[in-house]
Length: 122
Image (tube, rainbow, N blue to C red; front, side):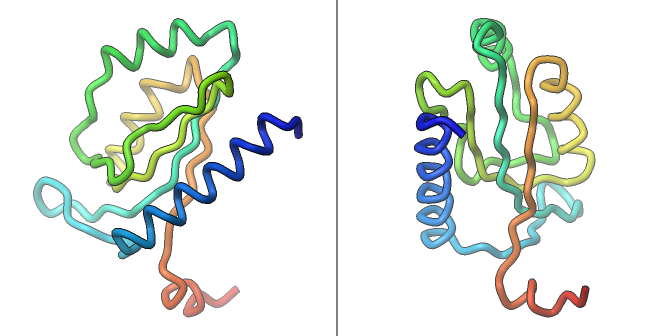
């Protein structure tokens, strides 16, 4: 991991923790109807040569039905990475994946409250 990636990862952790402390981290919510949604932390990355294409795609992109941003996409200049926190249904997540998969690599992690996490048995 180079110094830029290390700094970006540290910045991501601080930003996510700060946001979750401000808004809480209930893991389910209702989005536009009766769809059950979960909270996720999403990290997208792309090759430096695709930066212009990503900018063009983002300028045309509309948030799909079944998805709502809690922390909007935020990019550290020069890192070719973006982070966001969002609620999404399975269908909303699939729509996002289909739009970005040809240009970006996505890492998506579900967010759970500690009390819920400890109830899960291995």
